[in-house]
Image 1 (tube, helix red, strand yellow):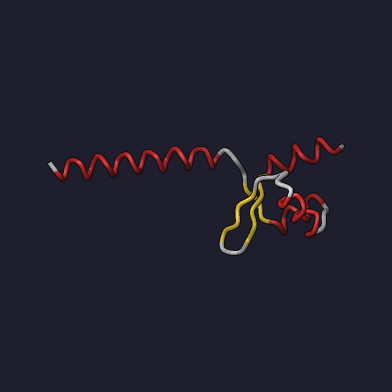
Image 2: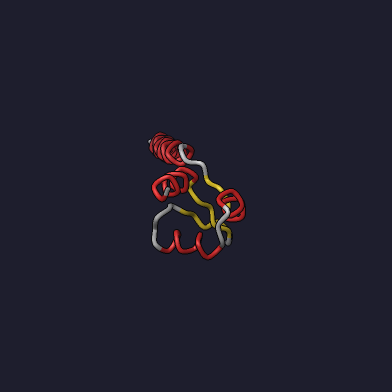
Length: 79
């Protein structure tokens, strides 16, 4: 009985994790250095976008990663 419950709980956790990974995989995340080079912007500009929450970002082990779709739409709106 307990074994069945544990297995069911594990299956639920794995399914929830898969759903989250599918949502995250829809987005392409790019490191700060590559974004600055592609967009020809300064580190301060990128930081201002991050602080003003104009783009989604993640900090992983001290490095910032930015959502490529957000950056493209931000620069298309500016033009």
